[in-house]
Length: 139
Image 1 (cartoon, rainbow, N blue to C red):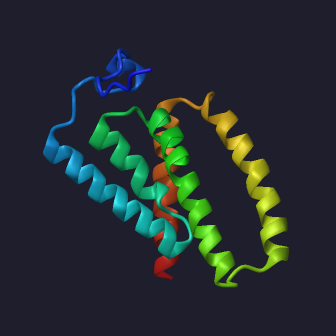
Image 2: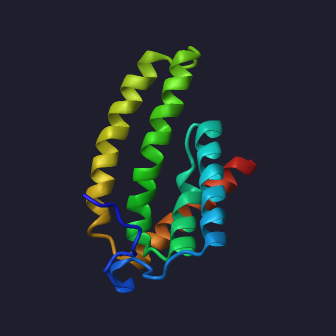
Image 3: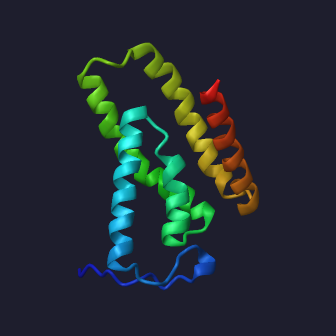
């Protein structure tokens, strides 16, 4: 089976920009990907806050597809970061199990809800959460 780098046949209305990224754009996206990975590893999460806008603006994905893709990108990063933190002895098992169960249930619920939330509402919810998170960090 041959691998192809051709753009998808889906139209932009289905969430994909059919234009092929230029070499410069690919370099910028790789650098942004590195920044997303660094933020995720450094803060233990939060890479999605950069990943979603990068996917929307950099690749022309609609916001629902950008959110879903961000989860797919962040998941392996989170697993690697988790393994490093476990190896260093930085993780306590009780919070991992109790909070992890809630995150698992919430993640499933959120991914199901994503199908039903209008794109504009999703954009507003995401912006409000980012704004509130930034304000909370300042105080």
